[in-house]
Length: 424
Image (cartoon, rainbow, N blue to C red):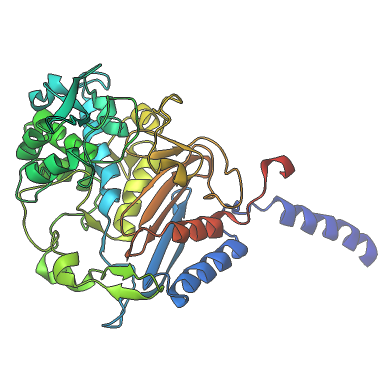
């Protein structure tokens, strides 16, 4: 009789066990190998001296699945890298500015293919630099084939001068100095409008001051100082209270030092007085392309807004279709000159993000998922949004010059070993 009972009990237990819901494993969620890879990678880049300190935060499906920090925010003072460490995010300011600009797009304030000069006559009479006359020594200037559009300033195809060492044009750029911190955004725009373009709009991709012009355009269209607009319409609704240009004195002990890697591989801490000078003083300039500080948790809120197609915790920043537009490649394949963008992998460019178009072609390229969008900063900070896996990642380090290999190692740690398409 007992044997008969067991015949019924065992299948019943199996049914219960097999039918009990289990939390679905993700890329990092419930993945011990991924967690171990991440811990090992972050520890290794510190221990080998690639960076002084590193912190990383990863969310999947709206939940935190990984956080850890290694090394020092200030190695010399023995201040550990921590969750509340404040980092200078440099060009990771751009996706914040893009959000601010596109809130106005959602309100119908502009269209992407309208001329910039429609709203900013400062850019109405632009010329294109075509060299130096060998006899007179004067610049040779050509008329525009077409006006700079707003789309151009969102994808870095406007042609604004960006190299102070460029023969001829660099001299003008240095003399006019549009990026001077004492300039207001209006003064910056007036000065930029007086400098010839490097190339005809829409013909090349060249990283430069386009997103600073976006900040100026936000100010012009909204009638509100840019710093106030972005705070009111992006940062405050997302509760990004630690993302700001100016860091109050009481919070400065949490600011990470910035390090420079020397040719022999050693790290030298830059003096805080210079490294932090933009953020511990009030300046007239509120650039859209750089200048913000943040914490990993604060920046994750921006990333979560993007992966949620414009909304987070009831705060609607952008329309879903607008986020999709931003995360769509806007670079025509005919644009062959792309500066260093190809070093980011198989990518195009949307509105203030690189957009992954194809899987990595080899194990040497940055790992990533088709459809992801991302950007980074001069001190080697990084974030990305992976809609396919509902994954967002933020990596904070403070190392110059830009350390692309750190990003490569971190991405490999998240996604695991590279597998060629033909063997998947």
